Image 1 (cartoon, rainbow, N blue to C red):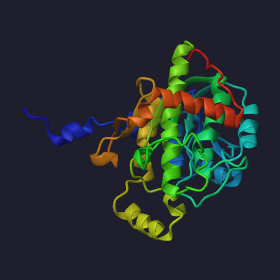
Image 2 (cartoon, one colour; image 1 turned 180 degrees about the vertical axis):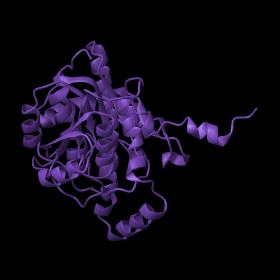
Image 3 (cartoon, rainbow, N blue to C red; image 1 turned 90 degrees about the horizontal axis):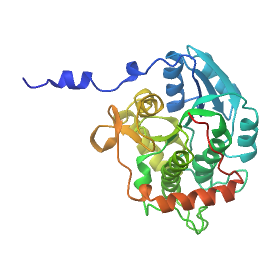
Image 4 (cartoon, rainbow, N blue to C red; image 1 turned 45 degrees about the vertical axis):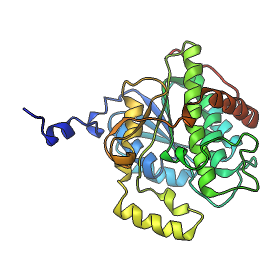
Length: 306
């Protein structure tokens, strides 16, 4: 007898399949809104102690107060490496899961506190530094949010000038930062495996989810178009958080990439999805790691044995 559509969809992964998280500690960057908040709500509800790593402590505190479960709020500005170092210096206990969720998207050209292009500096370099500084405490996994945007444009890291001086475009910079997220995960997993650690490096993308990121587009016409698309096409932030939750809690291989199972990976239940060829290049991943160490001054520190 043929399986019904209802029976197939009933087996799809959803928030109710999150294993019990009691006794586990999770740090989520950018947990005060959007995908980060939806992720925090689900993990706290499952029993985890969730640390909101946020730039605005007041907003983070207000968000955490609405979450049912165990939470705390700590300041972290990924666009300032001094803030990243201060956050890591204040950490002194085991950390089960680090979720590199925060990000900026298609902004007008801006610079971080240390002078890096804002999207590459925030989305990649800030999380690169944070992960390496916290890695000695991590016991289970690191999940980094990427995007289908890693397939945009020329699909490469501009090693000759990652800051894109004189050729900046919001889409090029965002695509580069998301490609960097996937290459970072690839090389991190290689290093973890080589060092004998059981810690996993994983990536996830939300598909097309309605969040506040789209409201910051540099082009006002694109902002208006994306606002309409958010209402008509996009899935909710809770649905968009499912691939992150899947990567953070399920037994999947290192370097896996989770995303929605629907057409074009825009929406749907979480599953394992494919990277582009550019995001699967081990030589580019190693080269990016070396460059990132030079730019941030933060070097590889092996994680625990998991």
